[in-house]
Image (cartoon, rainbow, N blue to C red; front, side):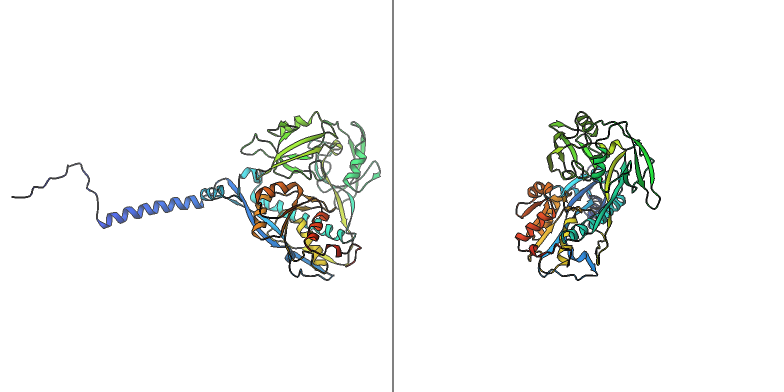
Length: 448
C-alpha cells in the first residue's frame, strides 16, 4: 500500500526554515533594534538635566606674587559644581529615576539665551566673584583693598529719563553738586526728593569727561521688590519668572535668577503681571510674605520689607557701587578655566586666607563650601544646591557650608552629611574654627 501525500493549499506560503532565511530575518531585526537604540541614545530632546558635578581643591586655583604662600598641610577647602547637559530619551528616563537629578525644559534654564551666551554670562560672573572673594579675604586680614568711587550704571528704566542718555558702566558721582561714593548714599540723596523735581546728575562715561545730565523725577507707582522680569517659558502660568535680582535690593539675599514667585501675602502669582498688580497698592516699608519655587523645585519663603523706587524715579533700574583698588605690596589671582558662575566665591575667600597665612585653617578636614561672596563679607544664595549636596557627600566632606537661604534645600537633599548655614564670612570661619582650624591665629592688622 502506497503512502498518500496531501498537497498544501495553493494560496498557502511555506515558512522559510532554511539557515539562510533565518539569518536574514534576525540580521534585519538586529539592525532595526540597533537603529532604535542609537536614536534613543543619541537624539537630543529639548530637556536639560542638572546633576551633581565634582568638587575641586580650591588651593590649586590661587596664585600669590610678592608675598609668601603656604600649602595646607592636611585638609582642603573644596568648591563644588553642578553639571548641566542636554538629554536623549534614554538619558531622560535614567535621570527621571535618579534622586540627585532634576530635569527642566531648556527654556527654564536658558531663559532665551543660547548655550554660548549662558557660558559667557557665567564666565563674567566668575570674574566678578573672584574679585569679590579676594577683596573679602584681604579685608578680613586687615588690608585696605578698595574704596568706593561712585555708582556704576547697570541698567536704566526703559523709556525713562536716562534711557539713551547714559549707558551701562557710566559712573554717577554727584546730584546737584552733592557728591557720594556708594549706592546707599545715592539712594539717601534721592529718597526724600519728590516726583516732578528737577535734579542734575554728574555722570562720568568711561574714558570721557564728566557731563551734567538733567533729570525730572517721575512718580512713585509701587514699592520696590528688586527683581527683573524673566522670559516666558514653555510651561508658563506657574509664577513670575525672575531673570535678575537687584544687588542690595529687598530680595537680594532670598531670591536668585530663575526663581518663580508663586505667592505674595498668600495670594497666588501666576505671571509677572500678577506680581506688578499685587505690588501696586503697597508702599516702601510694607512687609510682605513671599513664596517662590527654585529651578530644582524646592520652595523658598521669607518676609520681605519692600523698598523705595528712589533710583527708578531718577531713571535707574539697577546700579552698584563702583570700587577702585588700593595699592598692595603683593598680588593675588584666582585662575579658573572651564568653571563659571559666582557660587565658588566663599570657597575662594577661605582659601585665600589659608594660602596667605601659616598654619592649618581647615584643621585637617575636607571642607566643601558653596555661596556667593560680597566684598562686605556677606554670603549670597546660589542655585543647584540640591545637586551640590550629593557631590559634597560623595566627596566625604566633614562639613558642607551653604548660604542660609539654601540650607533647607540642601538638608532635604541628603540627611547623612553635616550641613551648616552661614550668612557671612565670619559665620563660616566660626564653623571652621569649631572643627579645629586656626581661625583665631589669622592676622587682622594688615600684616602677613
